[in-house]
Length: 286
Image (cartoon, rainbow, N blue to C red; front, side, top):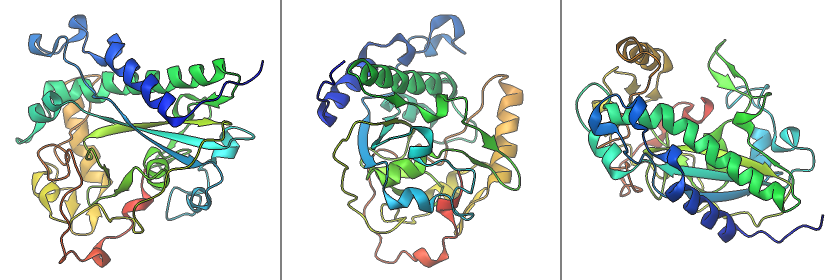
């Protein structure tokens, strides 16, 4: 079957329509943790970034201090891969506002984190299927049977959405280990690897943390005390998430370091006094 020409704009329009039309992007009434959560839209229209599957930065991810040796290159996920499409799904204003302040995640945020993850993977899968319908090859790494998360000696996985986003020009890392895009950091990433040769987006930054002002607001907001001037420690964060799961079985999440922050919905103003030398290995954790 001859291939149809696909441009980044086509991908953006497809994902916009999926975001608007999919019932998966709204909290179903039969699973709502509270009546007010029923029907709530979880994500706004996504941002899309494209990188070359052979960008040298992907090879850097295999280093032990980044994602590790079990990290798989785009060309290992898909033989002949040419492009990686990175998708940032920003939480809606209502979800973010519901979770700003306090020391426990809002019910709406919990839905966004759990059912929302199902939605963003479904959106990426729908995009991959759309690309395959044109004669291309495409897959979603986190939905592939080869995707795995390892917890020893530290937490890492065979694919990193954050690193793909950085490489695709969507944004840079931050003190709380999120990625700050032009629509902020309160959201979730997913990606599609394809053999379509799309034009790679330019990275409008040179440093790993250029979009972070190191204001420390996330450190003050973290109920687990997991964030300090050197970055974020996983152990206290995960311990806190376990308490959330005990309170709401089948749910987890927090998001206090993303909601109500200067970087919640945009890149914060630059801080000329920020000392980036104190940050240690923010880019090395999944």
